[in-house]
Length: 162
Image (cartoon, rainbow, N blue to C red; front, side, top):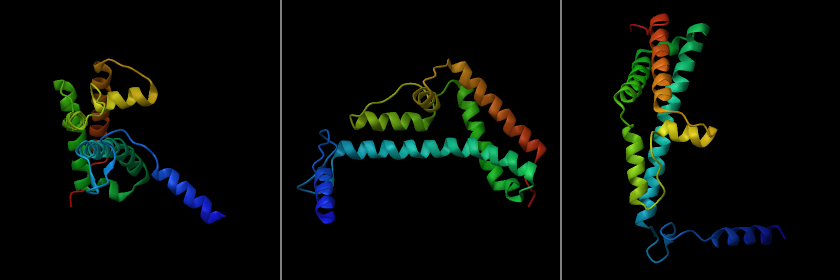
């Protein structure tokens, strides 16, 4: 009985219908070209999300590490990478540029025939997740204040010299 149920569930999963271009070509057992573009766009999206997490959680860990005396949060390589990451974000926002990862993801989605979005990555996902729309100056201010907080943490808990 259990085997029959599992078999039926697997068959019903395999019978799912996907939009054209999303399915695996049964004759050649290869992904269709649109699917490859869309998978590449998803990979860039995950990379971008990881970058955002690194910037945000990096500062949280630096601040906690300073307060709790965690020596690894004063690692020079980690701190320089974090400072460079937020410096790129702040510079792009002040220059009015959209992140290259956002542009690449959007381009890959268009190549695959999938939906794209306009504006910045953070602005799009903040709007999507929180249903909050804000003018560009709000994000520029937020990025700038975040960058100042990173500099303050750099001054208060400088990286180790070794």
